[in-house]
Image (cartoon, rainbow, N blue to C red; front, side, top):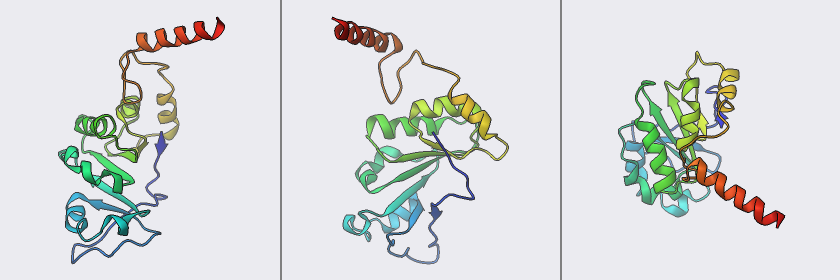
Length: 176
């Protein structure tokens, strides 16, 4: 899991409230709101955005399934946790990874606590921007706390007993 320092982040919010957004340059790593994306996606052809670093900043009520045709054009999707008790972004991440096959970075933002990290990782997040009062050392330790989980996750949907049985069968076949 990648930890994002907001002071060092190379992604920046696109400005454009007063008019249309400019065409992206190759060096830009633009983070757009969903409203901005809908306003410019027809102007920015797939050829114009090919190789460009475009990302979307979504709130936790956004319908990620409606983004399916646009996902190949995106390198980053940030999903917001307005409160640490609001888990809708977990579902969004799982849908993006497991159902829609999104291969880009999925980043958790907002009220992200160290305690959330194992579930964030299991549901498809690969980057987080921790809340300011959270410690990086604690976050790294939290990711090593559990060696395995009983249930499957976005990387392997099989429960642990199926994964272990397959590993045992593979080991037996290699020794035979």
